[in-house]
Image 1 (spheres, rainbow, N blue to C red):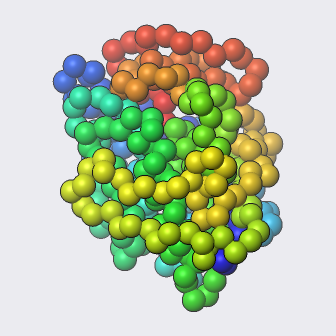
Image 2 (cartoon, helix red, strand yellow):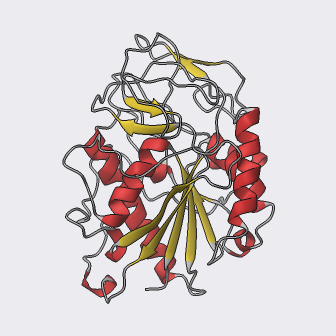
Length: 319
């Protein structure tokens, strides 16, 4: 066992994109660099958040050794100021894109969006790895809340096992992901899956930082071998025994939960599951405003109450 600390962040405030919930047709208010309407870049406010996040990451102890990210543009753009300042990325083979910690779209009946290809992403992000193979690729047919958690747990198990086996023994990992996936990450690491998925536990504020520390003990030798996910399996996710407080990779303790003290705007764009697994169609509000989605509750920090609503016909407000 060599990996000791995992830092998790969510991408910054993004530009808006919209979807027709009847047809599944996407369009964007700002053209995506990848020409995928559902793959928006950060808004100007999000770019400022990313710079503040990068400045804070330089102060982390222990420092970051490896970086994995959702391959959606907004996550990689959030990491750009970080990789410009961290030499650790180059020795670790760059940013490793991991679809297993990518976006969650619920159970909508139409095909769900996929990120751009690694070769295209490399043209925008020079440190994006072309040699890393994702552990799992989410089904374009959609996922339930349970499947999201199991997909995330499986991806984490593979990531942790791979880093444990690296010869130069990296000690720390930084993950950049989305709101729903961040919550699932926290639950999979700690092994704590609440009976009610709506419970507010791990805080997915934009550009906030959470820190997980690995539990001590010879756990790796006791864990069964991780089965390999094969392309074409869809939602047939290899099972990982993480629930009941076990956690993936021997279990982790959350010692920092969604810290935003270094961000000028503080805690913004919080989110939680609302129990509805259908596609969300409410619009993305501006920074410091409050909105809700049909899938998950959205709140600005902790100062405003979260309500639930039907939203309107355009836009995804979640992640």
